[in-house]
Image (tube, rainbow, N blue to C red; front, top):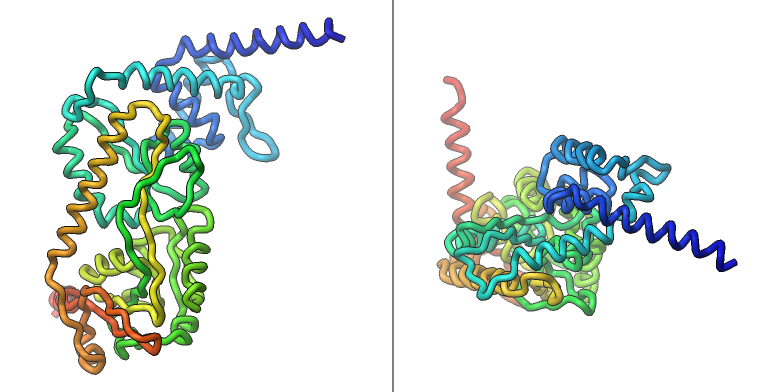
Length: 386
């Protein structure tokens, strides 16, 4: 029996050696492409992770097949799967890339001004309009030779695996719990409110009850992580609220624009609601109960390579967040008009909704949205043929 097993073990060892030797014909860029293709198993998902077009990713796969003399990925009843040879390449690729990154990124003393690496941040798209512009400005000023890539979360993307494999440096989201191997720091807190058009009946009346909240047709952006929308609903259930979702859209910006000409309500965070209420004729209305708190965190893998660079990136993110919060706090608050005046003028004030008794909460809309709506109306009138 041992005589039969030994040749098989020798064959496996030889195959592993062939797989490792095959990497000699690849540079680091092709290695990274190959690893992503073998783990994602589709050209479309690999293209997203590599920040490349699908035709370019397909061309890279074709070149890799030619260089290695193997199909690497083949079709099966379950979709694309790695060949036996391709499967044996995954671990050697990961190990080789870790060594390459370690050698490339090792510096006696980290200096952002001379850093040439690519920093990768995973975050949901709705954060892009909040502190990300400030973060990009700081990054360009402090690390002019480096690259910054933002990776969207959602659509089945496993951000924890990406953190563990070094494909992402940090993740920013409101996910409450992570695996034991990851570290987290709190960035900022927020709370849940309602966002709707300024002329919505609930906004005109200036308050919303629990029954009206439950009956209102709601819009929900696609969650950025598995069960994210369920987490919001669980938070609402703690204060006795439920929402009726009738429309789901893939992006938060689409959601905000969809509210302008509909009777839909978006249950979202206060800071994001205020951002869009400044730009569009929308109104922020407080929940009819104590709003659930939402905490945003930055997550990273302490065992990842280039610890100094990732530490610098985390500090830069924290600085950008503080700067954004300070600028937000410095903006003058606009006093909300009484409900009757709100109905007449469709005003929108971005000052934070006051916490009141459970019977009802006042709405806050922004007066700037009135000016935006009026300007848009005048522009439409001016553009009409006479």
